[in-house]
Length: 474
Image 1 (cartoon, rainbow, N blue to C red):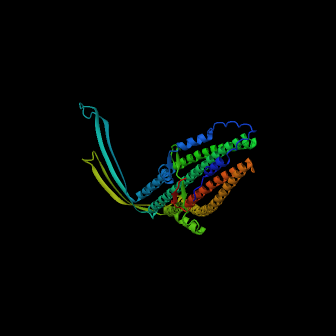
Image 2: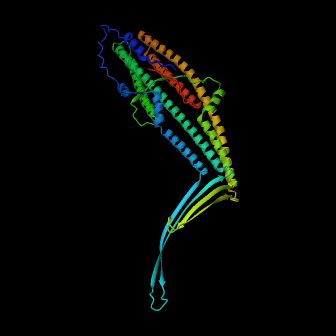
């Protein structure tokens, strides 16, 4: 990528200052009025204050690092991955013994009336107190269930792997957004420079036209025309300043930071993507092998295939080993009765009203849905790769054409300035040439960073995080 030569003021202003000097008035001509003191327009004052406030310079690598650290969508994706890994541990628990324990201790009192059995014997109420302790431990170990537990465990591992791939895809999308926003800031920054240069040229030309009108060598309509051109340049500068500030606010959002935009960005040149001129089929194959979202979909399909087998296993029994120990008595240390038992248990749901069959049909339908989504994703990958590749080619050619257009527009402006000084041209011709040069400069800026953006999009569509850049200075 070639740096844009913003040299408008470097060659226009010296030519205007030296070649458009007003001629000395003739003795019969009225003495020209003293020109008003030069004042800096508000738009230029604001532009200078904006430039002075940009103390920090951040690079593309720093912007990407900030996004990795602060972007909420990455934290959300990480939380999803942690949850998926926790579900793997949950499914693994089915292989381990399930142990339960309970204990109770009760104290009670019972009262009964004593009847006089022998004349003269005492009568009244007798109270009896009771104490009882009960404690037990039971354990259950799955021995065999026709692959249902192992199937759930393997399915959860595939799902967790799919979530990890999805997290990687989210990272690639975030970096793509950061790069796009970063290049947009560079675009708006360069366009702001074009607007500043244009306003400075219009200001210088206004001074020269004003002097020529004062000495009578040019009509007053030229002055009005040039004042209009300067006012239009001020409007464009204000709009460029707003677009630049908005672009930096959008960059902050893609980085996930909530700070001020009192910074500027370092200009970078984006190198060609490896293989960007290869045949489409080769690039598509490379994308299908590298993209995390494709890998995630593949693992989701495998997880659902395992889930179908797990669901079908509901037709079969499960075999478990059981054991228990209980201790019953007045207290657990004295007079208690200890009993131990163990055995095997076979659980078989012989009839569930067609539940398992319905669940199997649902699982198969979900599998077909995921397979269709996988095919849709393959088609989307092909379309994205083709679009990104075509955009790179188109923007390369557009940049070449924009370079030529800017050279031609610069020469046209030079000739228009010369014709105006020689008295054979008019101010409208100069104004049109200035507008054409400004548009050509803006077009070159847009083509330059459109190429950088399209290469970032191609890298994302190919499933790579790497983007080769070289820092450059303007």
